[in-house]
Image 1 (tube, helix red, strand yellow):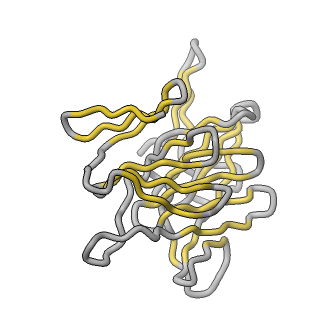
Image 2 (cartoon, rainbow, N blue to C red; image 1 turned 45 degrees about the vertical axis):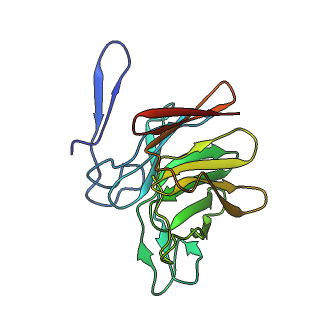
Length: 193
């Protein structure tokens, strides 16, 4: 709960969360997501209350509160919205893609703070939505892939559609290696090209 720590080869620098609402400080006590570094050397991560970006060159934070409403649109200001934890997955240009295990994907345009939610649409046989493991991977073509208890789920970022593969298999982890999707399902590792 100390915040974000950075070691530069000589010393450790700790960036503690800001309690007074200072715009240039990290917000939230506990980092709940993986760290994602973009091409501008900014580090993106989620805490218990916001998505933070940390500019390594300037040592400044920027914060984005993601809200979700039942009209399936996420935004940054709205009546009746609820705060949503979302794990950063992909930063491409001005767009940050994040995932929530039960709500699906959100894409935040960091230039204008407009955020759109793409709810999960894949359902179990009993009609319940299939929850995803929110640490997805991008295949460098157009899809973000997720492990789930009901196969692999892929979201096509161009067509804006969810698809399901290998429905009868439970997957726990995914990685991309040399244009192969590597999926772990208990005692098996499966490669996809």
